[in-house]
Image (cartoon, rainbow, N blue to C red; front, side):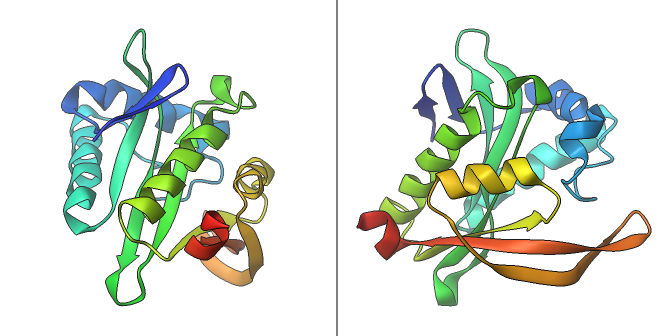
Length: 178
C-alpha cells in the first residue's frame, strides 16, 4: 500500500532504507521526545530489525510507512499505526520526520492521509496519540488534524533517569466523518 501526499510518498520500508533510519536516529532534536524505542538504531542490523518490526505491523492491523521524497525516493521520516486493540477498534499513531523538514506541513498532510485510511479502510473507531508533554510541535500537528486533547498521564514513562508526563490526544470516526 502506497500513498502520494503532495510531493512525498508513503510506502512500506525496505532494507535499502536502513541508512535513513540510522540518520534520523542520530538527529538529537528529532529523537529528543521520541522515547527509547528508536533512540539506539546505530547499525545496519539494528535498522533492518526496525524495518522488520515496521513491516510486521501490517500483519497485525497496523502498519508503519516511511515518508520519501517522490523524485529521489529518499527516507525523510516515518509514520504509522501500532498498539492495535481489536476488541475496541482503536489504535495508536506515531510519527517522526527529519528536522530539516519541520514546519513545512508535510507531517500534517501525512497524518491526514493516515486518518482517512484508518477510518475509511481499516475500520478503526478511535485513533490516539501519546505525546511527551514537552513536544510542542507534535501536539500542534495533532491539533491541526482535529485530534482532541484528553489529558495528561503523569509520570507515565521513565526515560534517561527520570519520569516524564505524556499527553493523550484522540480523534474518533464520528468526528472525522462530520
